[in-house]
Length: 564
Image (cartoon, rainbow, N blue to C red; front, side, top):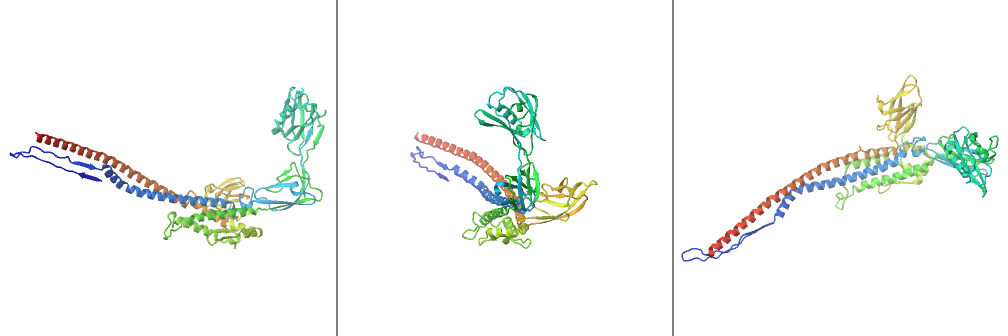
């Protein structure tokens, strides 16, 4: 605001000759609000920057919304990975490859007391009967009684110890060592010898050293190499070098699986059924059997589908929130992606995948349906029934299926983005596989012996095959995509670092960077203008003050002349 006020008053006395003798009056005064003038000019300059900043804020809200969708899709496809492929082998992470075993018994034996099992993915499905006639055991021998475990023994010598067929180690004993010291020296080499020593206290004045093999079905070997025969002195061996008191003979496990008699050197048996480890715990009495059933662990499929429903609805809820309207029918202020085409395309693609029919089955056969709010629901009773009656149909409906036109090319893994193509295999004159190509491109697969692996970063990544042929040939690989596979690919593609959502995020981020630069330029220009005006108006103020000072001086001079 600018205000200017001035006032003057004067009186004069004139003589008869017409000369003014006195003059008096007040000075002019001026008051200008320079700060307001400057701020008004700067505000006019920064008004455009404020508008641009609002655009930036709106873009940031969109970026955040896109990132939320991106995160929800990543959660969605991560949860679907185990359903997207049905490859069955020990390395598979597919839910269809997980296994569960039940053990029952007939006769006078407790199944859980006699046997435990661990299963790997892809273990062979089937029913088996098992009887255990003998458990594997390690040899265990004992020495004679010693009066103390801490007194010096007075023996000095070196001996070699180990298990038959295994590594040995030399143990040195000095005259100052006690029974406990000898035990400690033996145990210091257990990782090499697989022989462990301990002390059994029979009474307060009777201590015996016990040697035990840490591996079943192998005898302890011993020889005195120099000095005193230490184990003979401790009563573990006799004068011929034989053990004096064998507490447990080394023996192999003996059992019968499906009528086939077998022996193993351990009670943990992993080389009988592929992917199965039996832990034999107790011999079965005559007439008693253990009944084993190995099946697909369908509970894994059920829990994964339940997780999918939760993750799908979380993404759907976010989409719905971005389509919210206000009471006047316009987009709600929080719906920053209202009408967004990318978001709509993703939702349409997911719903189209859910509505796919594979092998005559649909998601309804799994117990999946949309409720009145268009939320996905799962009837676990329906799912449980179909898994028990038509597991193969469920597998085809959900997962990727990959087949080859040649029995010599076996599928090891389909990957999570299976493809259909013709694989050209080249074999040299010695019958060695040298390359695998598609359309002449040999960089798409790597060769390791007879294994063919899709190159990382290619569309064949994750696919793997083994080739048993000895000649070059072209083999057709055919893949079909189940519902879970399609959903997995859609969610992964849209949320990837090169997907449509990231493209939108990158575009908005770049746009905001450009807009922020404009804001910075405008604010910099406004700051320069402010400095310029402050300097300019300071000069004006100084000129006014100087003029007022001169005016005051002239008035004072006139008044002084009049009074004379």
